[in-house]
Length: 510
Image (cartoon, rainbow, N blue to C red; front, side):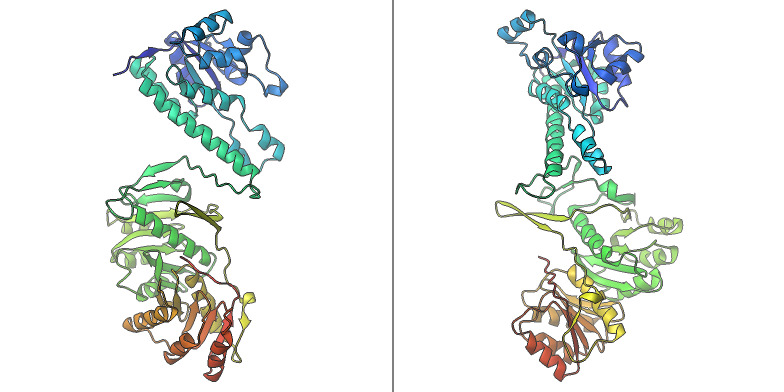
């Protein structure tokens, strides 16, 4: 075990004072000499605890409206000196530089200021210079100095002071140094991304300072992690810990249901990131029953999501189904009581938060980044390609099917009728295979496709798909268009009394 080091002095200069008082009192009780600046110095004095102002050490006042307080050799010399280096020790004595064993800093809240919609000037003033410099210096010299870089670490540091009576090991100091560089790198990333919000610099900077270790990744032999603020988006009411695969499915469910915000009660059931059941109905219970009818086999072990409060009646229907996760904007008290009847079932209340506008994924030896597909096909986007126009009901179903198709793995075909998903063909290498898969699946669950509609995520290069669809009873088609052979599909529809609309927007999802 490494030798413990007793601290004799501490520099404290923080933005957030919450949780600081017991640390200051403990350091004083241990006989640690305190140095401080500005508001923190006043805070310590108001506690009746002696403290030396940094300007009394440097013989220089705080200048430029507080922009320069600690940026001085007598401060940084006290932090960066190597206590086992004769030359450094001699220079401390020569220039009357106090040794600083502890540095406690909490940075200006840059990200919160940006998120608040503050003015450019207010945001710029929240770029900490002295604080970030103190953190980097103290963390670099962790062999001699303890660096506390965030109010998030106040309690851990207080516990350490109490446990070891003011002494620390090099392992303790290195742990806090690691946290300090996490803080500094995250801070710099936030500042860069603010300045680069127009994307002039083609550099990718991502920093998530909230993370958790998952039980495993997609498979038990793979390690898995989640980085992000899950609690900002969901309130977890019940159930086991979410797995890597759960999180991917929850993401797919949320992205799909975002297409139905503000609509009549809509329920969706997803499995392996794809919808296996979706329906919009006058009540949520009816929507659930018709979503489940879309594929009651695949629904086993699925992810369930609603666009409105989940009520008691719907909960009673759900309770007989084995499912991993149930998501809704709210749950009635009775619904919670019912659904908690299965101890592992995860219940999530979805909060309305701003979602990322870009999609990031690893690729080869690098990273792919793209804008999120935020385009939802609307009635105004439709180009009526055929002589026959869709009926009002068909138009509703076409747009319903299009929204589901957008969130289904390519190549995909989605079949819908009366705002109910009848079946989909997902992730096929051939669009014809996707259609045949969807038709077969619909038939296996006794769906009558007479008068149903078909949505495709990309254009038809040949008329084979519309021909197969027509022979199965499908009456109307929505697709992006754009093939050099579009006219072949249009001609087939015209010759066989089908309607077709084109959106002009492809929705591949790989």
